[in-house]
Amino acid sequence: VQLQASGGGLVQAGRSLTLSCAASGKIDSGNVMGWYRQAPGKDRVMVADVTSDGTANYADSVKGRFTISRDNAKNTAYLQMDNLKPEDTGLYYCNVRWGVVSEWGDGTLVTVSS
Image (cartoon, rainbow, N blue to C red; front, side, top):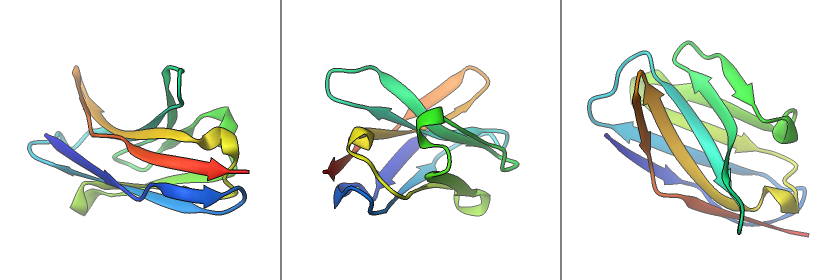
């Protein structure tokens, strides 16, 4: 399984970014795709995830600002990030999991300036 993340960048606070994660390889249809953030000097934390039937889950800090979605035909997940804040800065990692399997992509850097 390979995960290709894209869409990071440098933006000013209040602006928007959209991250994409394309998964390839042998992937179970009942998977969960998600985004995690690792800020400098901190642990990796869940930002949002979405099941194959579209049920989404968000960290409290991003509720109302971020929207996760997916295209099952393309095995691709998206993270629409609106009203970005400096505390959203970090490396964003894509994850896909099912059963005991958990695969990670390389991070994409999001930097939000104040």
